[in-house]
Length: 557
Image 1: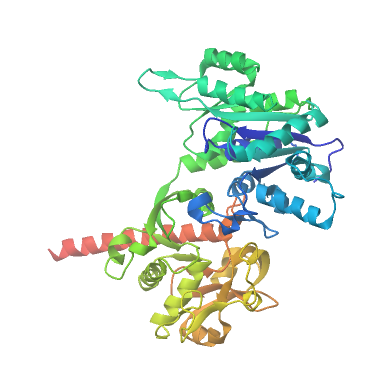
Image 2: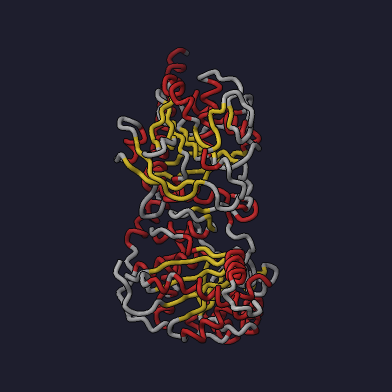
C-alpha cells in the first residue's frame, strides 16, 4: 500500500435514538465504497464499557469476541470491518473506556502528570484523542473511520463526544467529519414516519457541542424528499446530507444502497477530497448475485450453547454465507442447543441435516450434547466440522467410543479424569488472570501431506487465529492415530495438535483454531468452502440413495 502524501481524514460514526441500528455496517459500507474508489481506509471501534476488552464478557452480554491477527480480543464489529474490506485489523482498532482509564491511571502512577490533578478533561479526553489519531498518524491510511459505541446521551459516551468536539476544532472541518445514525420510526396507527426522535437526538448532540455533518436515517419505509428536507431543516444540515438507510435483506446489500444514496460522494465533497472515478464494485455485485441466485440449498446444523443470541456465532454464520456463494448454494442454518441433545433424540434433531458444526465455547454446560452430536455425525458419515472446543469434543468422543477409554474428558470439565485426552497447555498452568491471557492470535501450522487438510488448503504451511487454554494431550497421540484419528495439522515448533481428522469418513475435521475469523467476501475460508461442498455432496448422495430405495421398493411391489 502506498503511503498517503497528505494527513489522514477522520470520520466519526455516532448513534442516536436507539442502539443496534447498524453503526458497524454503515461504517464498513462507507469504508468499502471509499476503498472501491482507490482510497486506503481503516475502521476502528471505541466502546464505552469499562471492561479492558470483550475477552471476559459472556457472549450473551455482547455477542462473539472477535480475535485479530495480533491477538486482540475485540468487538464483533471488527469482524464486519475485515469481512467488508478484506484487510486485517489489530490491537489499535478496538479501544474501550477500560483501556483508556487503565492507561491514564498507569501514567499517573508513574508520575507522568508531574503531580497534577488527573481529570476527565484534559487527561481522559487527551488519551481518547491520542487513540483516535493513532492509525491516522501511521501514514498508511487516507481515511480513518471511527465508530463510537452506544448512543448520544449515554453517560458512558460523554468523554468520546467531548473528544470529537475538540478534534473538530483542532483538525478543521476539511479533515474531520461526523456522521450521526438515527432511527425514523414508523407508526402504523398513524401511517407515518416520525422524525421527532431524530430531531431530539441531534439537539442533544448539539448540547454537547457537536453538529453532525451527515445524518443517516434507519427506516423501514422510503423517506422521500419532503422528509429529508424537514430533517435537514430541523437538524442544521443540507437536504443532500440526509441519507436514507432502508432495512436490507442482507448486510452485504448496504454498500450498494449507500452508493445509491451517494453517501461516499457526500463525504468526499465535505472533506474536500479530489474527485475519483466511481467505486469499482464489480466483484461485490457478482458476490451478491450468487448470494441471491443459488443453484441449490444445504442445511447445516450449528450446535452450541449460546444459540439464543445469534451474534454469539456471528463470524461462523457469515463464513457460511461466503462459502455458500463459492459453491453456488444457499446455506440454511439450523440452530440446535447442545443442552437438548441426547442419544435418544439425536436422529430426530439431525433429520434432514447435511452437515454438523460444533461451535466453540467454554465450560461444562452443554458439553455432553456436543459430544453426542459428534458421535452421531461420525457414525452416520455426516460431514462434520468442530471449532476450538468443538475439536476438543471430537477428541473426547473418539476416545470414549472408539478407543473405549471410559470417562475420557478434558481437564477443563473433569480435573481428575483417568484419561485427560484434552489438558491445560503448559504455558497456562501458572496463569491466574483471565483477561488477555489465553493463546491468542495467529500461529503457524504444518499440514501433513496426503491429509484432507492439505488438500483443502493446497499448501504445507498455514497460519490461523487461536483463542484457547486447553489442547490435545500428545501422550495419547499414538492411540488415536492407530485407531484412525490423525493429527493432520501441528504447530511446527511446539508440536501442538491444531487439526484432527478421521479416516474412513467422507469429511470429518476438528480444528483448534478459529477459521471463521479469516473468512471474507473476497476470500471465503477454504475450510468452510470444502465443508459446504461436502455437505452438498452428502445431500446429493442421500437423495440418490433414497431414490434407489424407493425404486427398489416399487419393484418389490
